[in-house]
Length: 259
Length: 339
Image 1: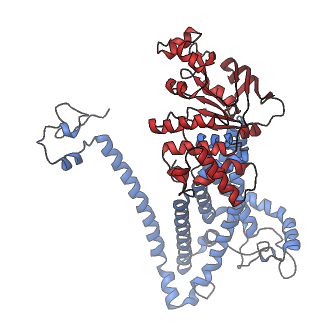
Image 2: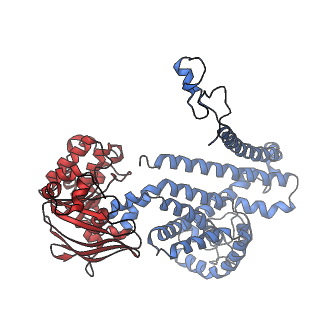
Image 3: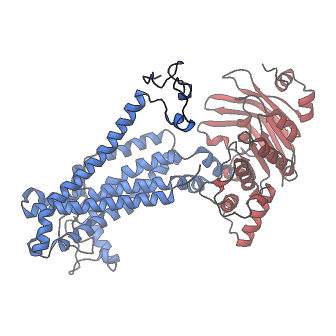
């Protein structure tokens, strides 16, 4: 239930502007990979190409290959809708559907696949997904209340439950803790540790300690200046990146001597 | 940066200082906090909004009072001798066919226009190529600028072409009362029926509903749309999960504004409809709406007849008020809470 991702010569464009240039990367199944780098370096952009959410922005395009277990998700005839059903995503700000209850939120993705769920199946799946997101005990008595009534951290875990309810192969997280307090952040980080037993997790973070805590491998992106494309500078074991990186640029960034 | 003239309240540090830093001897904390600095800009602005708010109430009350005062003759006639009223059977039997005609034509217009409007709004906001969308929006807004007399002329031309369709309707769907033909099996020869008027009305209210819902659909939080898409929703599923629930209360308001226009539209209906008695069938001649009844009879009316027409106007006023209050209630109940 977990796939390997191979990124080959990936260039990403917004209109004529080349936002990201020549990314090469191999992400192993059942691992956590963190993307770090300064704002505007293209790390979120790269993440969004992994489930073709990137092309939702008008004028955006991609060249190169992204292979999931050898199949190019940008190949001819590949439906982005099917890609997104296999690659779940959690966003920077929690975005449960405000008109839906907690349970409906969890089941939203499953219902999209036109699957008819019996009531017991739906109940089981809700419980499994919410347990998977470490939220079950907090919400089990109010599954029919709106998801927007939860705290920020709970809403974010609800979004994770919604993403894993469809049993994706890969889970993408775009700065999932940047709007959360330290305790909620800890809850999500613990959860990421559990999730990697089943899923390939890719997380974008601004917080280098977080990258060091949760990830197996880290990719450092940087940008030469405004208007220049972002580049993958170094992709290595997280321990290497934070103790003895190969590139001086990486060293400067992680030690705070940036630029 | 507005400069405070409230020298008694602003302290030695000048404008922008908090009331707490003023020179006045300390009072109890509660009263001290209530004395905020009042700046002239704020004063002028709040006075201007207050005047605007009061003005709208005054105008509305003025209209209501005028209608009531002018209806006095009708009301006294209704009490003393109902047979004086047009039709000879009192005011209510005179007015209720008009009320029914008005409500039916507005309802049909709404039923026809709303799905088209939502479709056009969704197309321009979420489906159309980026270059085409603004052009379409512009064309729709242009529809709203066409004078209703032009719609009326167009409606008359349209009516002649609809007779064949009405005949077909009455042949196959005549068993439904609203499409029933006349006793001899015929339908309106001119096509100038309530159904034609309703269809023209639907095109007149289309731009209102479309532009309002378009603005609402554009406001859908991007995060909600992306949440749906990232779950593997198709475009339509994304619209159903994120756009429509978010816009629900706005859709209701937009429809109600359209309904308001359909209820009150005068010129086009007066031109298209050949008035007659109330009948259930929409494809034979007959029926009348309040606004068009007033427009067609007002020029020759005098005395009691004039008062009658104004009273009919009062009825329309009340209907519109009720419809709007109903719409408000629906919006309040269905609006999305939270983010």
